[in-house]
Amino acid sequence: MITEFEIKYETAASIPPPYCYYYHIKGLVSPNDIKIDFSWVYHNREGLTQEEIEDEGFTGQDDFSWKGNISRIWLPLMEELLKNSRTTTKTDTNDQPFLELTFKTQKNVIFQGCPDSIWNWEYFLQEFIQGIYETSGKEAPLLIRYKKIAAQSTLFCSLKIQFKDRSVSIQTRLNDAKMQQKSGNWDEMKELLELIFSLSFISEKAEKREPHLQGSYIDIGENLWYELGKVALNPSLKVNTIAQVEQHINKIVKSR
Image (cartoon, rainbow, N blue to C red; front, top):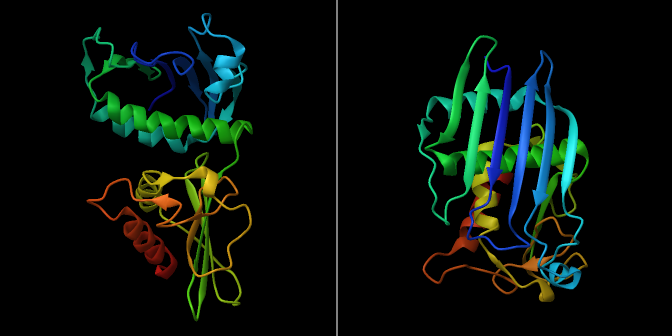
């Protein structure tokens, strides 16, 4: 079993400031949790003014560091990734991010170097860091709301997605009935999120008030409502992603 680990990551050299960053994670596994030392630093901003940084949506105070304890739920996921990873030679290409991993047990170093499966690790680490952010209190769990108003019925669905323990809480209500609550499947929710966030959102046309006219609407955690097909659009004319989103939500609502 893993007893400690260290993860170093840096964006590809082709990523310009103020977007480029690196992060460093050190973990020490205990019987009840994982002790984390985490830092995220934006770099190479010396040539930018504060106004230029703010124009790109940053504040200039975007670095973050935290020490604390997170759930052990991440350990089996790391171990599964390690089973399918091999070390590879570091590349100097500008388009490749840098990722270096060190994993140890009590007796051995079981992995040290750059993994060949970097994209799988990148996706996992996005979730892992989101779990750190939620545990630290830097960010709240993701709350997705969906509302479909038809001539004779209104469906409301709320999805609370917590990365810190990889849990999904679902609330649904049809018309004026009592709100129903249940747990959701994490992998199914990941598929839904990928579809939702692939849509093209027109932020300036989103509504702050909860909608009451016929249509299908979604709030992606911003307290803004986007009407599907009008303010939230398919990313491609070839695929009806909006229909897929609604199919996934209907499946979640009907499942027990």
